[in-house]
Image 1 (cartoon, helix red, strand yellow):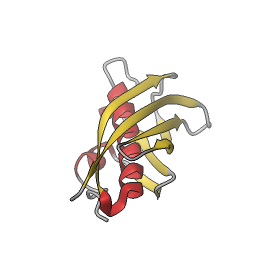
Image 2 (cartoon, helix red, strand yellow):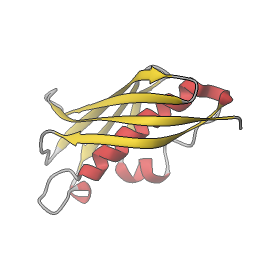
Image 3 (cartoon, rainbow, N blue to C red):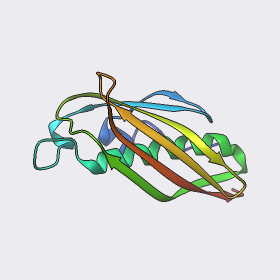
Image 4 (cartoon, helix red, strand yellow):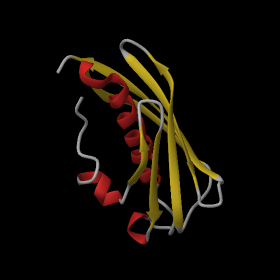
Amino acid sequence: MEIPELTGGFVALLGLKFDEASADRVVIRWLVRPDLHQPYGIQHGGVYCAVVETAASVGGALWLGGQGRVVGVSNQTDFLRAVREGELTAVGTPLHRGRSQQLWQVEISDDAGRLVSRGQVRLQNLMGG
């Protein structure tokens, strides 16, 4: 089973660190920093969307394994609390894993354990190489 490199590219640009990555749970941490802020000095919502998509895609790919690849077809992310600094942790878990699609939920919490964002991603299973 092959999944894309998880230490370079966009993952590195965002500063994401994987604490756990399995077919049943993905845990990602990162530091909120000024270059990830939107103009009002808080974490940009696009970062949350990207982390939600990343967690779901990695978990979905690990579950599908060598049978094929996964691609996101829907990402719905809610922003619940403004964050200016500190470490955030995303935890992704599957809600549904079927023959053609998967649905994953991801909850993002701050270092005080407060929920700051949540999202879900629908993945299409592309069977075959």
